[in-house]
Length: 354
Length: 230
Image 1: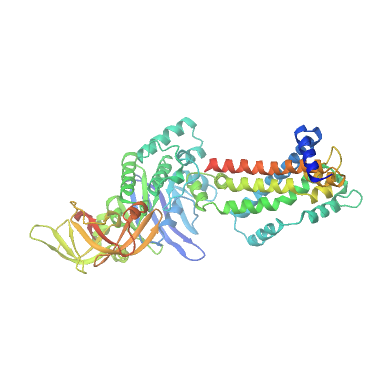
Image 2: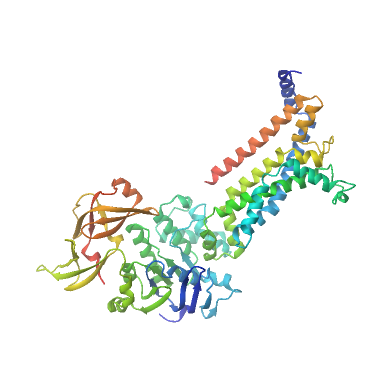
């Protein structure tokens, strides 16, 4: 971790209806993964768009490699970063056309484009998808194409806006894996916006807490989570965050009673009052109490359904309300509906102490 | 002549492919094609500007173009006739009245609102994030606009075909500013009318069949192209 790749100094962005960023100062260091952790509407997306030079700040300065972004050089500065949107956007045409777009506008030769496209598609495990129609892919595959499209450019800064927010666990895992690999092997600096504490805990080197357009604490994940700061506590209105009482059983397993007759098994010796988080992407939904090594199997009823992209978000009452997501395909094949009885299955290690 | 005899005469004429019929058809294609091309050349950039920029009065401009789509060709033809009249018209000095050029200009004006309105709609139907996507991938502002136009291509092609169809099938302007001068300004539409007036319904029928076939064929090609793009 050394010199900053990008620097924001007192950056504010005011839209007619609201102030999205309020005097933000932040450095992105070479080779780091920096997570912007904050609830929806906190300004993460605006911050990333300012960093990507597709949104000009109302006031304040942005620097890339020490050079200030101005109206005169903004088109050139855009070449230094690439941004993956939260809602996947694909150009019409093939996967190849999509991934090659940024290389074409940079004037890369045709043969080099072919090589690079093949390489990044392999990285996101979509080898041989070149000629497929991009918009006909599944949501997860499209998001992987979007990541490949950004990676093909080999920019020193990769900006990711909730890259796994609407994905099933399998696609989310592939994307997290690729992000980690690229950062490790190519030393690409990554700024990752997320409201998923689990992701913010495992991937990044540093975390910046953001709420109401202001960047609060910036620090190592251990520090930020360890301190259980007021700012962090204010995000604890996130899905699947519960207060409870932990005790260590005789067999050494920690059990957390979160009320509503729900007890969760967790990893780590904890006792007393705790807050726990179970990431929705870690929970498997099943129609029967499947036998598995997972320690937590909770029976409940679907009380709310919401379709998000190719996913269906379910609110399940197991005594406490859990939010989980399944792909549209599994939603149909499981024959789920309002009032369906389902089992939520997750590992003890998926219960995160905050 | 009874209708059946007319039809038989027409079919004989159609399959004999008289040079005059071919000439009228080609002239119609040329005049309407040129008009569509000119309307596209000024209409597409104008529509792109209107669709992609926010400015006061945008709604009003869109409303005006939408309303002009339905302008009666007789009214526009008469106005142009007054403008191009050699003795009295403000544009009389151009000596364009009763030339194919006058018809091209008139039809281009007629179909510009179609091009502008349909292209605006096509561009506005494109995901607004496409332009940002192109930018983040390193496109300049003009390259980003091109990326949007590419996404809107089906709609733009449709605008082209719709405007060509309107041009090739209109009668008012062609009659007022083109007349029907043998070997010079005869078109399919004016031909259908004039040949009937001078007692050659067979020729009228042939010209009508050709006109309908043209319109149908062009739409068929558009649909095939759009299907391949999907």
